[in-house]
Image 1 (cartoon, rainbow, N blue to C red):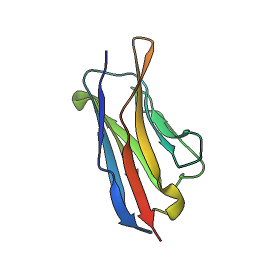
Image 2 (cartoon, one colour):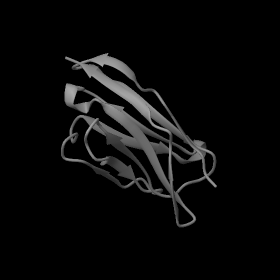
Image 3 (cartoon, rainbow, N blue to C red):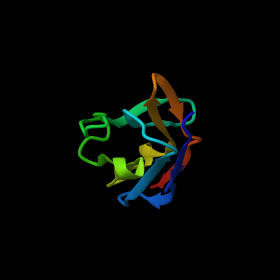
Length: 112
């Protein structure tokens, strides 16, 4: 069993930055961030392998970056130049032992 705990969400103005963190209770393989806005399906924002290879959604490419610290079992999402359309609940995702795990979500609200 793996627990994923997100932190770092909040309310910011357009153009500002936020960094989300997700701490896992033990080592996790691939980790990622998804988001879900009201009325929309959950969508992948970014993921990172244990070795550090990354994939970033086109909608946030150039503004968001994902990184991880394997010694701390933590993944980060650096979000710059935030836009109102980035407003959503952001969920941490991880895979371990062939199972998928989700965090509880953290709200990010960007005011224009």
